[in-house]
Length: 214
Image 1 (spheres, rainbow, N blue to C red):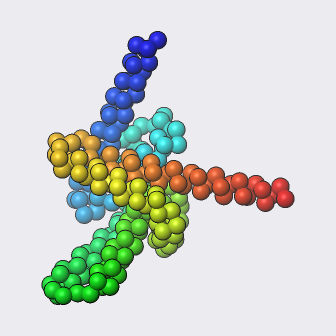
Image 2 (cartoon, rainbow, N blue to C red; image 1 turned 60 degrees about the vertical axis):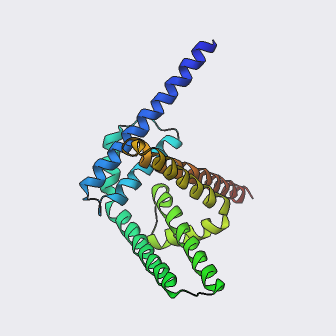
């Protein structure tokens, strides 16, 4: 009985390892297909959508075909969101260089700048998971990202810690990069986000039912 349990556990572990490796390979392939600059964001979103399906218990679909379909369907919107955030990040970076070059800067200026960075990180962290789970306008995703980011700050911090942990391990063991790093990032990122989204969806559904009954 114990031996069978061990075999089943090992089988599940190896199955997930193969899934992560497959999604990671597709992420690299489709990022390169978009010449990196146009492939990075739709490939990342496609990986999230694959993991979202698994989080919801849907395992009966062809990974490659589904990844390709999501990549094509979300190519425009994911690049729009991604490049808006990328440009904003560049502006923040140049502002940081400007602050560093000033020499003497007040503590208040540093506090304001780092608050702005956290504000930016909430946009990055929550925009793509929303796009993977919901339909809507880009402006709504940005607005909701701020609401979620500050209203559920423990989830925001959990995603930040997870991302830095994956990047740290990948830098320590660079051999993981071509096989697991990007899929591991997308996996934990959407998994944590989906936990919050599902709780919010259930709460909204319960409130709707309660309103109908009353």
